[in-house]
Length: 381
Image (cartoon, rainbow, N blue to C red):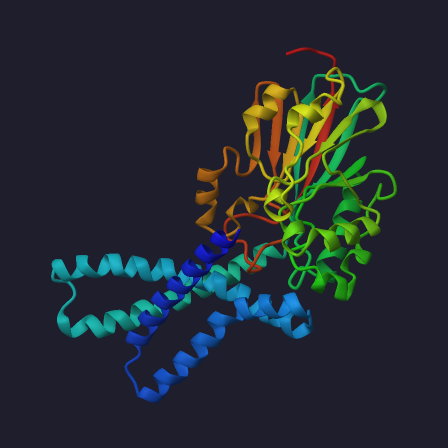
C-alpha cells in the first residue's frame, strides 16, 4: 500500500508540474502576475492532499471544503493534462509543416492554455451535472433453479456510495427515496459504503438518514476496499450499528432457499494481514440445487466464480472509470468493467456505483442504483 501511495503521489506531482509550467510559459505579462499565478496554483494543487491529511486527524466543515475543491482540481488536472499533451503533439507537426512560424509560438502557447481551461471547465460542468442525477438501471434475468413458492424476486443493489466529506445527507436521502420506489424484496450494498476516513460520516451521523424497504430483515452488505482505508475497526461497527448486516465470508439463506454469499473484500488482507476465505470453502456451505447469489466488491477471477456454480455475481468498485477516458482504462483492467456478462451458467452484473471517489464528476459513466428482477425457472439450459 505504501508503494501504491508513493507512485500515486509521484504521478500527481508530475502532472501538476507539467500543467503549471505550461501555464507559466503562456503568461506574457508582468512578473507580479506570474507570482500570483504560482501562489494560486500551489494552493489549489495542494488542497486535495492537505484536506485528506487534516481530515484524518480532525474532520470539520473546513476539511470538507478542501476535499471538495481538491476533488474538482483532480478533474481539472486530468483534462488539462490531456489537452496540453495533445497541443504538445500538434505543435511539432505545425512547425514541420510551416503552419506555425517562430513569431506565432507565444500566441500558440497562450491559446492552447486558454482552450485547455475552456475544455476542462466544460468536461467538469457536464460531469458534475451527470454525477448528481443518478438513475435506476434495470436488469431482467432468469435463473434456472427453483426457489420454492417464489417465482420472481426483486433486488435493489447499490455499490460505492462513498459517504464522507462529499457524499453527504442530501445524497443518502435521495438514495433512500430511490430504493423506496423500487420496492425490492431485498436490498444489497456492494461495498464502499463509506469513502475512507470515518470522521466526516460520524460528524453528521450520515447513515442515520438512510431508510429503505426491508431494512429490518432484508438488508445485507459486504465490505469494499474503502471500509479498510479509514480503519475497519471503527467503520464496520458503525455501519452495523445502523441495522446493516455485513456478510464477512458468510452465507445466509432467504425465503425460498435463495442463498447469499457475502465475501470480505480482497484488499482487506493488505490492511489487516488476514486473507479472506477461498470461494471453494464458501461454496461447500451452499445447496447448488437452489439459487446462489454472490456479492464480491471487486470483479476479479470471474472464471473461478463460474466454475464454482454461482448463479449470479454482483460487484461494483470500478465506477466504470467515472471520468472519460478512464473508462477505457478500467475495461483493460477488468474482464467486466461495467454492465452484464454471462459465462457458462453464471451471470455477472457490475455497477458503476451511486457515489464517487475524488471529484464529484462523472463524465464517463452514470451514478446508478440497480434494480434486478429475477425469474426462477426449473427449466434446464
